[in-house]
Amino acid sequence: MTRRLHLALYLDDHGIHAGGWRHPRATPPGEHGLALYRRLAEAAERAKLDLLFIADKLAVDDVYGGDFGAVLEHRPNTHLDPIVLLSALSSVTERIGLAATASTTYSEPFHVARMFASIDHLSGGRAGWNAVTSVSDGEARNFGRAEHLGHQERYERAAEFLTAVRALWDTWDEGAVLADQAAGRFADASKVRYADHAGDWFQVRGPLPVPRAPQGRPVIVQAGASGVFQRLAAANADLVFAVAPTLERGVEFYRGFKRQVREAGRGEHEVRVLPGIMPVVGETDEQAREVERELRALVLPIAGLTFMSASMNLDLSRFPVDGPVPDVRDEIRGSKGRFQHVIADAIDRGITLGELGAEYAATLSFPLVAGSPATIADEFQRWFEAGACDGFVLMPPYVPGGVTDFFEQVVPELQRRGLFRTEYEGHTLRDHLGVERP
Image (cartoon, rainbow, N blue to C red):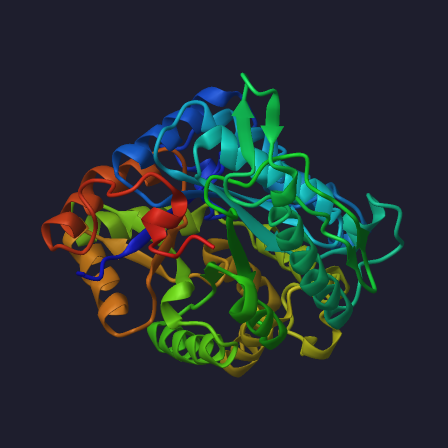
């Protein structure tokens, strides 16, 4: 079978670039009706993307300066409940996969197992769960805790959480529901069982009050970069959302991670690796570079510093904005894997903290590719053929133009080269990704 790219759309209402929400072609964020999300989802489905990806954060960022003032003044920081949004989108799409975030630190396995099994049924087998450990004390304080769990501790909880969720999804066998109206038999009870999960973090009996999901189990997505994350994802994930700012780092991550997948007793093909990438599309390379310049001119350093503070769970307001980047790598209590590299690189280059904030706000450490459709397709092909990825998570710089430009101009170029599908060949998210049904 010909190997082709897998593509996901990172779905939100304002774009990823910190200057994106201010761009003239952007829809003003904050109007959280279904219409915009529906248009984006339908456009992604027409382009034959594998899935939509909805991230989440369980707090308004308030690490920088100890409150949310600087955050809400300078960048969008609102999040609809992703499960509610996913439910709505399941009713207005037919084929595209639907993945959303639920935290293993601030949820319970039973709730997550039931929610995503339900979405899988409602969508006809298109659900994916992005299992994250969350990052900040702000989230902890919304759930009765003074501070966020430590890195090792929250990954230990996540590992058991995943085990408990899979056990609940497996409490119903295939064919357990008989629905025999004449005989008065709803289910074959011999094909339903208790989960009886008993661990250090969770006690869950089951069974799940939802029959086995159409995909067997919804797809498990995991996002991150740290060594602990990679070990957990190698054993559990069907899809990994990776952070690789350069092709070289992408190849290094891909090879190392696939080796860990093999060491976990799985085949490499059982897990797809999709790094995030930010395409800025223009009719010509120069036009695209001009859009990139416009976007960068709209970035305020404070937007990046507030984002970094929340993601690292470390208040950067105690350092002068015009001073050197401080070496805080040992103090990071949030997202470690990404920021170890971000801080080290900034120190090596000798830039100021404010300059780092502006840089980070523009890309979030994802590669930004500005160019014509052919130039962007060239870069996608280069990564793919170099063995850096199985595809990409598209991180639109602004909405909706940054999304529709890619679908209308770059996707046809990828299809012309035989790098991306022209039609869906299956009906479930597992079908699109080419990962087996358990």
